[in-house]
Amino acid sequence: MTLIYTDSEQEQLGFVDISDISAPKPLGTLALEGEPTSVATKGVYALVAINTSKDYVDTAGILEIVLISSQKSITKFNLGGQPDSISVFPDGNYAVAVIENERDEDLVDGEAPQLPACFVYVIDC
Image (cartoon, rainbow, N blue to C red; front, side, top):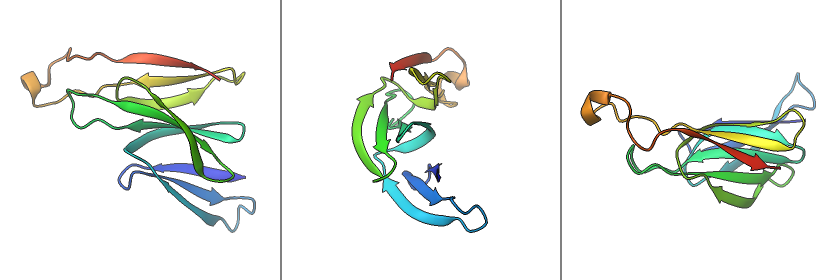
């Protein structure tokens, strides 16, 4: 009964004990190496999509897997672009990260397309 949330501004993941919904209790935070854009769960793990881009042209991002009970990162995967969201298939066999690669509104007057284009990354769970 743990609620997990992203804190983009502070570049962290937050945890709240909601076993007693009338009295939620903070369980702490986990510092990340970029801006978390989305979180999904798969069993005992949290899958966190993290934007690590330095700018809109050199896009980068990772998927970080966190063990919920210990709030510890267990592994990271390069996503090859700037992630927007992560979701786990209902059957739990796959996760999908949507790589957005935001446009720079000042570059060529913000006109599309700007490379790199967006794509979907499918992860075998």
